Length: 330
Image (cartoon, rainbow, N blue to C red; front, side, top):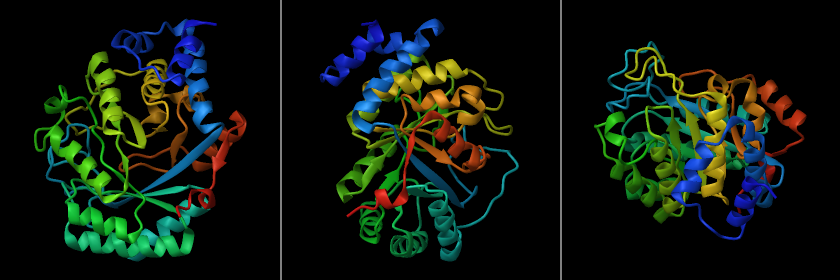
């Protein structure tokens, strides 16, 4: 048995990776990449078989954000030419849910820019979610920024299954990315979500000039946070943002990061998220050996791959889509 298979078996036996083992994954020689992917797949298959979860985003509010996140085209420091609009009405959100249902997306992600939601925005989202549940039975994830406990309780009561609030980077690297809120602000929001009984979703963005140790620290922080779903975004540097021109990633390294996330968070949903098309490129299919979830359709301010191409990719791989009806929570 090769090293990567042995490491996978060790993880399945309940052992945690040392820092040296974690860094070895990120430093894996390219000629061993297929063996590393096989090790990650052993873990993935143990918990998820060949099933893939599909998620679709609707950007219900764009731009107009006071935060200064260096990666984001919607931030106050961005000069990127994007659409800017206030919160969509309920009917528009419901139309998006219908599209998600027709695409076999088990999870519909309602996203809004801003530091955190107003009470009026919470009203719109909760009203929409109640109807989405009645019509389509979709799993609903909300991503509305920093949340107050009573807001979380309202979202839970309306039927929100999951709430996304990404850590984005490591605690050490956080101030290099944003200073308008703290790392602890993000952690606290995830804890509030957990206390309300909503499933926590929290992930990262790779390629923002972080070190490999930062990447290991991110994976460990998400394990400590006990996030049920971990979206792994790869920076798609947008002109007009502070990180404009940053190009640190290649497809092979992206695959190694996905493997690291699987080895450190073996039981969790690992989702290939923003930037997969431009960073994984022709190696996108290999990402589903460590990961078990992807986004279909477009992202917040960038376009995704055609949904028909995503479905074809899954068919070619021999993976099974977890349909919406299988995602309904009881």
